[in-house]
Length: 173
Image (tube, rainbow, N blue to C red; front, side, top):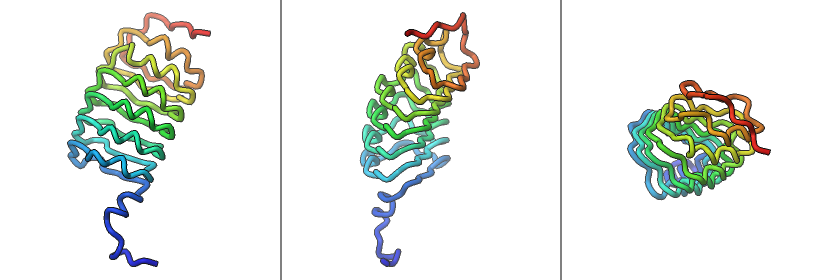
C-alpha cells in the first residue's frame, strides 16, 4: 500500500467517481475538466455557472449530472456524447435552446428543463431519446406541447405545468 501522503492530489481528483460541488459559488470550470474520466456523478447545482467547457463530453462514464439553479445560457454540443448519462437536471437556468446533439444521450431516463426559456422546436431532439421516462418542461416559453414528445414510448411522467396545451399531437408512425 502507498501512504496517502505520497499520492498526489491531482491523481486523487482524476480517479474520483463522485464530485459534489453544489452551492460553492462556482462561476466556471477549467477546460481540462474532461480529464476526470472516472466520474459517474457530478453535482454542480446551485452555483453561478454561465457555461460548460466542451471537454465535458469526455466524461463517458458520467451517469448523473446535476446543473440546476445556475445561470447557464447554452450547452456545448459535446454534451450529446455522454452516452452513459441517465439523469440530467437543467432546471432554473437561462437556457433558450438545447443542442441538437442532445439526441445522443441514449441512456437518459430523467431530464429536468423546468424554469428556463426554452422554445418548442428546441425540444424536438428529445423525441429520439429511447429510454426517457421522466421529463419536466414546466414554466418555459412553450406555446404548446411539441409533437416529437409523443414519439417517446418510454415516457411515464411528463411535467408540463404552465405549458398551454391546445390538444395532444398524435404520435407519428
